[in-house]
Length: 84
Image (tube, rainbow, N blue to C red):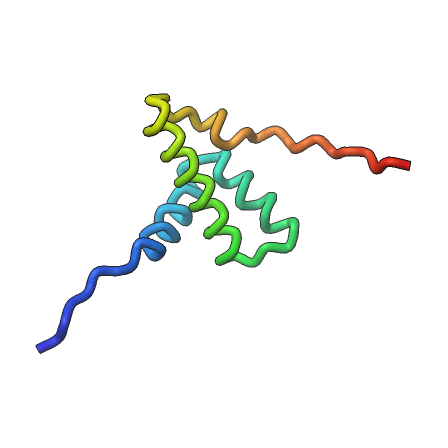
């Protein structure tokens, strides 16, 4: 008899993050931004999943509806000038 086990929550997180790359333009921009900064694919997905979990936690805790434009702004981040 083969024992069946449920997948760990992290596996579901990677699948959720991967699926959001095509469904959410903001999530795609966030992932691509992380990738250009040197994150590998799996690391970028993990950071995207952590961001999504943070948005879910905030929304449930504060009774705020999800807004993708707030969760993942697509505008580039401002570049800070170095102090002289």
